[in-house]
Amino acid sequence: MAMTLRLDDEGERRLRLAAEEEGRSMHAVVVTAIEDYLARRNAKEFSGLADEIIERHATLLARLAE
Image (cartoon, rainbow, N blue to C red; front, side, top):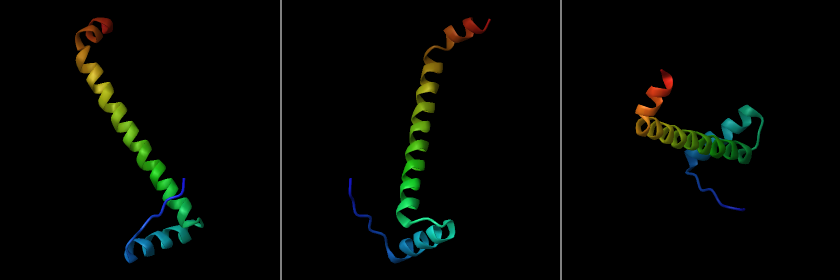
């Protein structure tokens, strides 16, 4: 999928510097940033679901732990 990313001048400058420091393209840095964001988002969703399950089944889990 093709898309356009519009950054202000400062954002573009910072992205370009980061890419140069890492020896990667700006595209590669942006793709990595998106992948990291989605991984953290998914981990947060999973953690929330796990907390919900633990709370919902606290009595059963306590009995199993005995």
